[in-house]
Length: 142
Image 1 (spheres, one colour):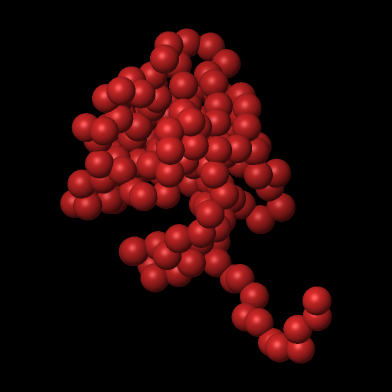
Image 2 (image 1 turned 30 degrees about the vertical axis):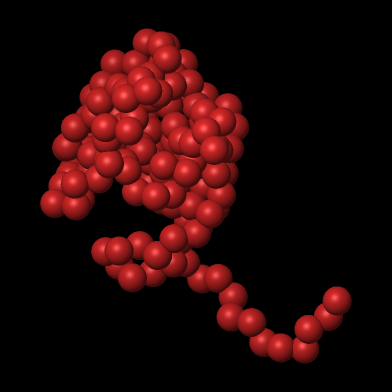
């Protein structure tokens, strides 16, 4: 079908997050700049111009946490309105595994704290809705 109407094109940013699993646990982080919001986050960041999306997600993990991951799949693609900047973002949540035993070297400008959480304990950690949906999809929870 053809619609003769002008639609506004998406002009937001691309946010990439990563579900990292290690020894039956998932890594959650708390951003240094979001500490007053109380929610836990997934590692990741913005896609750079001209950057391969999966390479960009792996780069963000390396920059924030100090270890390398292999991107293994996509758990969620969605959009959200970023509360701090009031701009719509395209969200891609990848799944990944560390390439070696993770040794954390946190970037203090970006990450305040991290925690490895079992699937069953995730309910104890407040998450943004999009990240909860991604984890539910990843773990097959309805």
